[in-house]
Every structure is written in structure tokens, then in C-alpha cells.
Image (cartoon, rainbow, N blue to C red; front, side):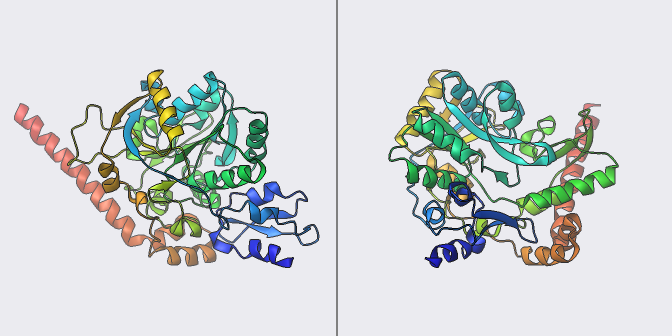
Length: 403
């Protein structure tokens, strides 16, 4: 029977930290502990474990998860207010609004104090506002397993919006308890990888140290600058801007995140990329392919929407019919050309090992990124300032011509 414990402990870096094992354990025999990089992994408390095997039965890493196949592809967006303040086209906000209005129990992620991303039940318009924008950090879903299961047992309709591995974990957990979970609707967010929350906290402390001000909120894609520009910004308790930067301008967190340096190790071998998905719908940023058919909408603040099941198609039709969103069907070949994670996981950066080595020694995130990614940062900055200079030069020429 000790093989049960060994299986869970030996998952190692394949673990996605979904915490399903912890939540199903009837004896509180599983805890999650941080490694030296701030990533959490399960540990079995032998004195409490009764070797029942429930933990392994809900582990999506150890079990086969049923998947849907993408059948249709759309570009879409919600109303102007949601679209303006969301990371892409505001589709998630529209789904939340529809869910609350039509009697669903809805779950999604908000950013709490200390910049922690956490899953909650979305109960109000304020929760929807707090759910907007990207969260490029680990999100804790431990409190949702019991709540979702409770509502499904009560025959309630449930919408859950989350990352691929989190949906897989929820499906394993629910299917272990219920024989029929048709009232659970899953919306998958296309994911490139998840970073340790410790890295974000380290970065925020450095920003506060440099600015000599305390950050209260963070936006990874600040709407004030256009969410498509991926400007990270911090504001104090009076909502005054104290910092803003981007990957191109050398922000250490954006450099590490968008270049595949700082993800959890499991992300580089993710099982949930490709055309087979966990969700009924799959959402992502929309990027224009200039060789594809002409578009009839503004090409910024737009979501890619992939239909993955019959339920997903009916749900999308309902959103459109009732005026929550607008959609425009696009050829699937367009998405396959643009979206890399429809083919394979994010590649492990050749700079990652050096970053980990430096961070292990210094425990200084910003310094570790600057040292490990020195050449990459220099290249990004040069390209950025050359582009800015070129735009300024063109503007001056146009102005002179106008004279």
C-alpha cells in the first residue's frame, strides 16, 4: 500500500499544483510546500495517511482526461466598456455577466492583496471588475473544488473559467464523485506557462525599493496604454501611477515571463496544448494574419474563440443571440498559423538554467533576470528605441512637409 504515497510524492516536477489531491484527502494528510524557487509541490504526511488512494484517483497527471477537439474558430469581443478594460476582447467578462443574470454559479480569478491570484465564486459586478486583465502568476484554486461539487450535487448550473491543467484537475475531481457532470460548463484560457508567485513578489519589492513607494495594485496589461502593448504598471493606494514598463523596455518580470524563462517546469511539457482541449470553449488573444481574409472590425482588443464541443457551440450562439458579444467566423488555418500552443508547449528557454542558478544563489529575481538575460534585454531595448526613433523621424518629416 505504500506505493500510493510513493506515486504522489514521485510526481515531482510534472505536478501542476492544482491541489486536487489535497482537497479530496479526508485526513488532511497532504500539504503543499515551496521549493527554493517558490513553486509548491505535494507532500504526504505519513502519520495521517491511511493509504486510501483518493489523491491518486483525482490527479490529472496520473489519469487520462477526456478531451474535446476544436471544430470552429471566431474572432470576438464584448461591449466597449468591457473590451476597453479587459486584456483582450472582454469575452470572459461577458460570460460572467450572462452567468450571473441567468442563474449560473460562476467561478473565475481575481487579484487579491499581495498580488496573489485566486479563484473565487463570482457573485457581483464588482467581482467581474476585479477579474479583468491578465494574471501572469500562479493562481490558487483550492477553495473551488468543494464549492463546484456542492453546486453540481444541488443540480445547479456551473461555469468555470480557468487554465488547461486546472480544468483537467476539476474534471478529474468532479468525475471521481459524480457520474454525470453535464451542468458543468468549462471555459479554457490558452496558456503559455505559469510563474512562481514568489518571483512576482520579489519583483514588486524591487519596484517599491526603486520608487520608494508602496504598490497597492498591479496590471500586467494596463488599459491606459492599450492592453495589446503588454505594459505592466503599479499604482499606490490613491491609484497614482508609480511604475510602468514593458518587456521591450526591459521590465524584468515581463522579460522572464514572455520568453519562457520563469515558468513551472511542468509547463514546458504541457499535456494540454494542441487541438484537443479540456474546455467547451477555448479563449485566447486574437492576432491578425495579414494573408487571411479581410476583417470587418478593429484589430485590437479582440479574443480568439475556439468551439470545442456541442455545448460550447450552443453556449456561444446564446451569447451572440442575446447581445453579450459579437463574433466573426475565421478560417481555422489562420489560428493554426498564429497560435503556437495549438501545436506544442512553450519551449524551455536556453537561459532558464542560468537564471535558476543565479536565483538560487542570490534570491534576487530582478538581478537574476538581468544577469541571465543580459543579451536578450539589450536586444529588446535596442529594437524598441530604434522603432521609437523611426516613428519620431517619420513624424518630423511629415510635419516639415506640412509646413
